[in-house]
Image 1 (cartoon, rainbow, N blue to C red):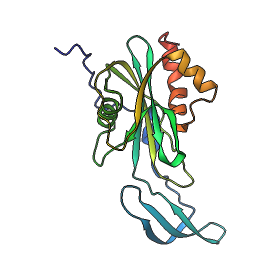
Image 2 (image 1 turned 120 degrees about the vertical axis):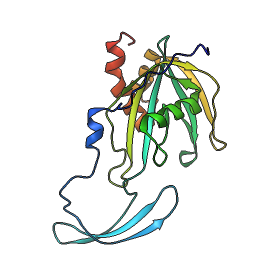
Image 3 (image 1 turned 90 degrees about the horizontal axis):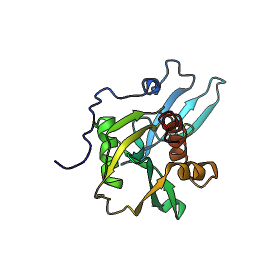
Amino acid sequence: MTGKPEEQPHPDLAHPNWAGLVPGGVQPWKTLSSRVLVEGFRVVLEDRVQTPSGAEVVYQYRPRGPRAMFVLPVTAAGEAVLIRQYRYPLQSTIWEVVAGGVERGEDLLTAARRELAEEVGGTAAEWIPLPGFYPQPSISGVVFYPLLALGVTLGDTAHEDSEVIERVVLPLREVYRMLEAGEIGDGPSSLTLWHARRHLAGRGLL
């Protein structure tokens, strides 16, 4: 016995809107040509396209395919587990919820469990899917899937060598004060917190 709560199996765990985060049927722009500008983990394409007006434009973007999970962990005592993470492009350390990319062929819940364990050493007793969203639809096809993790027990973290992360446990009311005060500058983390609020309030945690 480890003393940790046993995770409930949710093989079909998904928010109803997740199924709709796919390409639509009608494509008003016509792709004339396409080339890869950047290869590797974050592929960038440059397409020459024709718009409905007949104009031809060059468009650079990240194509559909990449996915990421965002997790708000809440302990059995009703405390939120956030992280302070250094972000090189910003040259700053910012507040975030747990997050990470979904590996090729990986189930979404499996990815969320992995990131929870790696970033904050967490194991959850219950998972609640929240509405998914497109973080930068004008330049990227990436899709973000947020989850609320309840009954979280904390253990040892397993950060990557490149990560500079501090785990911080805070009262939920303080986290939402920070959100409303604009102290959480990461957009996806803020939206994850916003979507989680009604579930937390419904359980008397807020």
